Length: 336
Image (cartoon, rainbow, N blue to C red):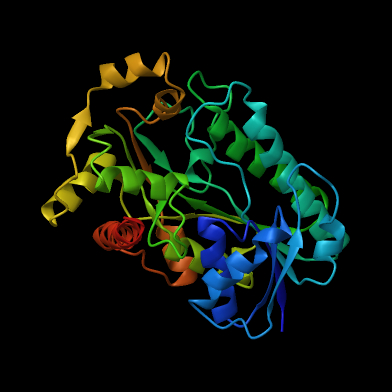
């Protein structure tokens, strides 16, 4: 049985990747920052599939060398999902950039030292936004210009981390596959709603968030993201390719709330925040400042290559939104 070192197993995407790996006959070694979290993660995974002894853990930190070589030495693949994410702009952009870049290089270096041939890396469509000017047609050859005026720390972190991975892989003759989702939604496996995606849906469903920003981009279902991560491990033609994993067309954020309202979620607000108001708030609100690269813009990603390569059809936008809302509402009802 082939074993995969899966970094960031406790996260929203990581948990789904772990389940998908186990379902496809792989053994999983999941990295977490503290082994005290292991039982909680195992319990979440066991609700979906019996690991049958094929799930283990290791303690790794994106900013520390300790443990990486040891973790990778008995594995056949590395799936590097762990990455910092904050919608708010940090005071020091290196709070995001440093762990993203250094963590990626630690994962690649550990794989190389262990003689692992292929690494699958979670990147993002935000590494493909060109000059961050909007109305961009995005494909596998697109790169975000990190020196663009409105390139945020998060955009820079994902772009620089991926570029460092490609440089390392090329220099050391390794195979790399990068996966590029848009905003990732879909049903969570745990009851944790503190992550950015689930927190957004929580705020929408409770009526706390009454207005959405006017922006459009292809959106991703976490189930698709996990599926393509796993298929990319051994798909021969996927080597050294970048794949967008998202809906076939771009959707606006207000379309999420309009759909939910039409399906009977009464507390959902369907307002659209005026661009000028968001710009004004961005002068003193770090979360609003983080939205500026997307405000009033439409980023359209080309997923045809991914669909063809993996014989894959994206989960429809409506299914993704409604499945997410149903899961989050169920958790909220339990917590009430």
